[in-house]
Image 1: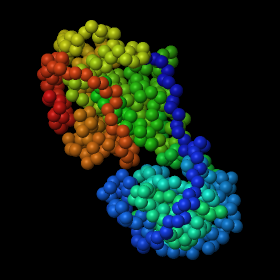
Image 2: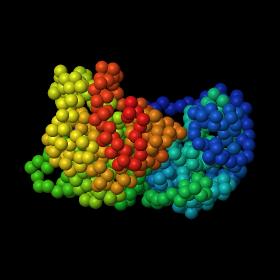
Image 3: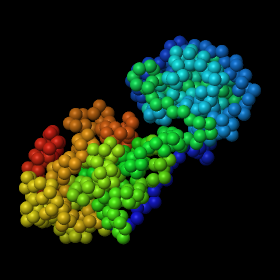
Image 4: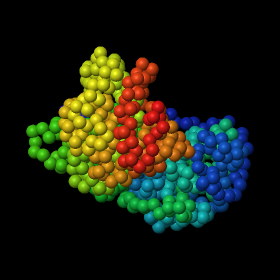
Length: 590
């Protein structure tokens, strides 16, 4: 239990994919007839709610995905870029502006001058030095005005130079920002041998006329591509802006200094000043803890949270810092919450979290729920600064499941012959060799009666003093029945932390896409997205909603033991329903 946590997972930075093949322009596309984009603007709620290729009902197949917004005189801007091609060089950008990374485009050699950039979740907008330069603003603002917007509503803006003979292959943009912004292209340096295409589906993309000065709004939720068959670079001014109202036009706008190093991941960007201003405890503390009991869906919840682009997983999912590893942290040294906090940092990727304040981390140690007597005070001292109501502390996600079926699933896990020696040691499976599920249940229930805590009226204090104090630390191969006494455990947590910091999730409802008893319109993905929102993450839904660590087994031979166990749990479940103020899943009664 006192072993050092394994090495931290490597953060995937926002860096070019060096092995990425450079897409070549397709000369056969020149035979396509270019159509003139009709005038108009896209309705964000109607036209950009999701990628057009993923929802056959979202748009008509032949609906235009490019619209003309107006015309702009680009002669002066074009002349400046032609006279000073070095403005696109990384060396110039990194000294007098700020050099940002765009992984695929950088790997393909696409030149860029970035003026404004937001993170993918529209949490912040960073204005780069050249955006505040009067001469550049004079050249940019006519385009903004022609689109009916203002600089304060522009969240991304850059000049992109696609080299001769290259292409940007068909794709649609991703990220929360896409559906809340208008994407505008202004051709600056182009010609008839540039093929600009867009369509609801890749197979039906049209070629659109994109001559210099024609201001085009592109639905970047649709498939789009460009092939440059010129003998020189094709240059577009590309910017994204938000509509007035709705909150998106009030985003924090940060000012980057010339040459400042911006820390980026694929979905985030952070300035050095943000690293310095982040509270020390918030940098150290996990943003969330997933509690529960083995086989309650804690892995499913944790893995879905870790799939969020702004979450950096812990060195190991179950750190056990606040129960099994606590003695290792205190061994041979003086006590104190500060020293424990420093040791706790070793469970997480501290350096990456310090460099990228937008990222958060968390862990999932199911046994914390059961061992509330030792975990809660340690957690309050280390992660809440002694104040359990502190907003800097982690959010607590408590996963619960039909306690009878949980116990049976736990039993099968402990008896599973598969696994590494360490996994088997941590499971504590050896003590169950030769014991039937009925024998285990009978023994555990008898033990709870002997200690006087089998009744539904046992207090958390009595349960901890008489029962929890007798349990071993270092493996999870015990307490198959006691772990299902959720009410007495949860009562201790709810008595310490505000309800707003604790979210109880039933595995049965999560799997069925139900949130607080109400079906979610987007099923399990939506229900998992609600958990992400609870821990403070921006809107997102995971692609993978499958159960984790699931095993197939037959309930038939354990029918009588399950029935007896449900009868034992019945008053405890009633206590849980009263504590939560809501009914329990119907499956718990079957």
